[in-house]
Length: 543
Image 1 (cartoon, one colour):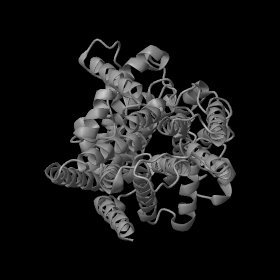
Image 2: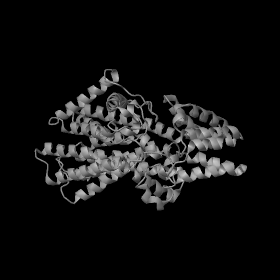
Image 3: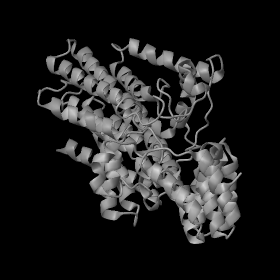
């Protein structure tokens, strides 16, 4: 009973601490990709569209091209929108925070089942729950896919790790065949929440291997069945993503064509090189920002490349010595498995991002918890020092998380922080302009829209030009507005929002001839077809 009270107390303290550090972001507004995921997404805004959520990309409802397939995420948004609409963001934030806490509690339980004890389990779970690198996935409404997928992954992990009363755990994975359907459901839900949910397949292999090593046996029949079932689900998920649910022109999650996306070798050397950035984020999360540098690293004969290569060789060495350090090897294997989708095997829309560490933090937390557990077993002096150090580390992490959480809640502060760190802040300029436009500050809105339109973002995306046009219209600068709308459509002829603004403008001005041309273009776009933009451009805007 005394042990159960200690467990309950630790779980309560971790829950309260997590709610406290994320409290500031609870009042955060919709912004950034929330516009396309929720605010302008017609599929999310009507629950009757739920079948389409499972057959389309996450931004199809906003008429935005994309190749992300995360229907469970969109379904959660649809359920929340049906109840709360856009009247408040609190429920959207609360869902992410509660999922984060639930995963942390399951992680705490899992670490204890692995034999780490109260101290190791509490510290490991505390790292997962309170580390500031987690803020991007938890505070960002559009980042829901990470907490959602990881929640289901942790359910599957617990299903595979039964309770044990022994100090050293010898997991008997899936002791009953009845757990296999539950495992399959959890894994499928993870994969439908985010594409990277397939990482559970290698995780399962490592967990079974760990169990067999500890018990000095071969895999049991139910374990083999579980591996086959999860493997088939992962294979089906990957196959469907590249065929049935392939919404872009490329096999990856970006349609950009450049040396990085075209070269597997360059993507892999870049991944090895940015391992330095991941380590820095874990041990010194001073500078946190969303838009990471889009910098490719050719070869490995440079400081970052050599560091990453050394880190990978060290990880391999730990796994080779698995018989001596089985839990250490398991933690390393979990981190490696969770990072696999971001290794560059498939082209992605970034080199590295903070929220890509969310699921790998399961393995990282195991490593931190294992270190705490080992120190707790030393003499009294070392144990006291370890306890003080652990509390200090979690306190410092909590303070940084609270500060970053507050930044996520302050749109202006968030974007200004992004501009301070970004190498190509075009999208940030555009979004900051949108914020100032919402505040009625037309002058600053136009300033940042113009900066966005002149950047690489303006050359690739229509929205900065469209937003600039809207600001010009509100300022009564109609000629500049029409010119900006033209530039928006030159970048993306299918950008229906600019076409609708032209439709309204020509209707109000009584220009029936050009209105008919715009109506025909809108009809083609809404039907999923094309129209002759060159002829349209000449007829509507002139030479």
